[in-house]
Length: 386
Image 1 (cartoon, rainbow, N blue to C red):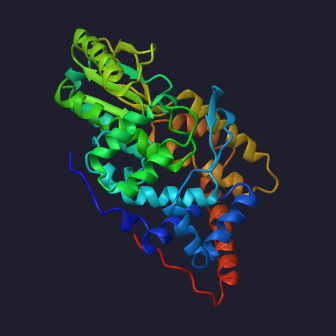
Image 2 (tube, one colour; image 1 turned 60 degrees about the vertical axis):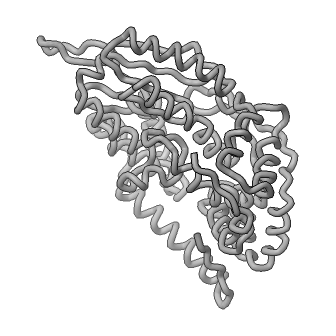
Image 3 (tube, rainbow, N blue to C red; image 1 turned 120 degrees about the vertical axis):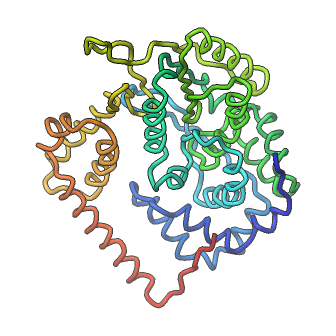
């Protein structure tokens, strides 16, 4: 693996600072206080430059109190950390430097939580690019999709050992000063393992740490139909015994090489097919929010349920707000990507019109742009350079 040096100058460059400010303050909706802090930092980027670069040079993570949330339709308990605005800028400065280093050896069918990953495949979101790749594999290799192995890593983000992650990063980062900043960030949370959910850097470190697993899976295990979404893994195969062997070998590799443990809820099952009499056999694959069948792809039931519930809620709004319209518009891409036209016509279309919601969000964005233009009238706005 190629190593990189002389990264310190790039990390503390003005161009990197301005790019990080723009990225860290972009799309800060929701709470008004969060939006005001982001706008204040963006408007005063020039005045705060010296102070922020000094903070980045001697970066030490702030103390954080974890926040417990219950995520998703299943109300899964998660512990998240909310970084301060100045920390977010430093996180983006670090990733701006590491991004090309991490992306270069990354497995082509790793799709989880990497902004821009889908853009390299026709400007689609990563999950939708992964969905297209799986559909293409099922269509082109039907005999190799007789069985499916699905597995994931137990409590992945909370289990990544700091020392092993730093060792892997040291193999590619040869700049000691820049490495000191990375080590202080990795070792920030309490304990000797875990990467905090909520930090922008965590999604990049999580994918980087499993890059070796991806190459081992392809080169050593010869897993042809292998796809990964963060710590969720899927392997298609024509031999059930071979998939069980891959599962056992993966369990050993994770334990010995990465200090991680495979979740006990792994599955090897007969993948969906249609027999000679036209009856459906086997099981669908539930992965990345989609349900994959041999001849179609639908949405996960919980995803469709949330979209339907959101449509009914928005239909009761008088008048309809831009915030609600944006929330509903986030489901438009999912509905368009899956074969759920019948469900859309029955459960969603009677309540909302995406064309109308698009007009509401566009009008709201125009008002925001006009307001920012009036506030910045006569002021010089820093131009971000990559």
